[in-house]
Image (cartoon, rainbow, N blue to C red; front, side, top):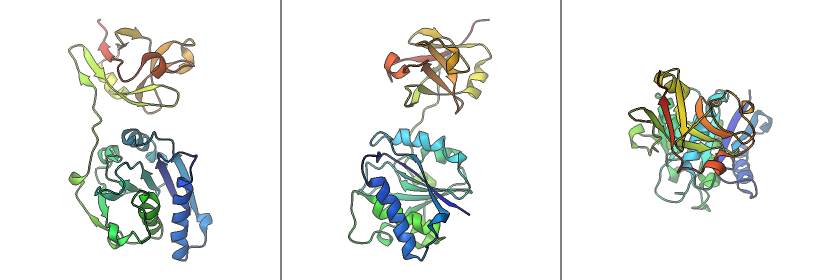
Length: 270
């Protein structure tokens, strides 16, 4: 049976950092006598998170992890606080492990996984000299991943802590107004689509007939990008069920600006 490690970082692809983290995991496995590396697969979820953009990483992880096989270990390294007193975490759910810093990167996972059990990595039990205070991906998190792969007891290198003690980023829901909802942009993808905090289920609660106002102007709702004319600004519910503001064959971010643009959902008058 394959063992899977999914990596999510802001390391990019131009430097050696991603390769070194994978290499260190394999090196630690080799020390433990694991020679059949064909049973292990690395999946590069994304390494192009903008530097230090914890919120974008949290969003991307949340909308990805549920599509991975049971037993996957998610190694998430967007860590501007590396080398400080911030906690290093292992999170255990019914199906997955998550490894990374306590800086809010797992905020949405906490909401989705109520039975999650958090552990704080006891750094002095993992770090071995010489080690770097600026590359915990290699020297702290990689060895922990290798131990999880070999079935090492969590109590060997970590201690259980409370969920309440962990850092959580705020992902605001739509704000209620007299006529409907005021929306926020949670995420901008590489196509320039503005992905908002409005889920289609909440939109249905407003009513079957509603309109989307962007910068005070109503835009058409479509089901696919191709329904719009080239360059037309439209709204649609994307693959995650969230309202996206898009420009067909263009970038809504460039055309509209973000986050200054105001996005409103209003119930249509009957």
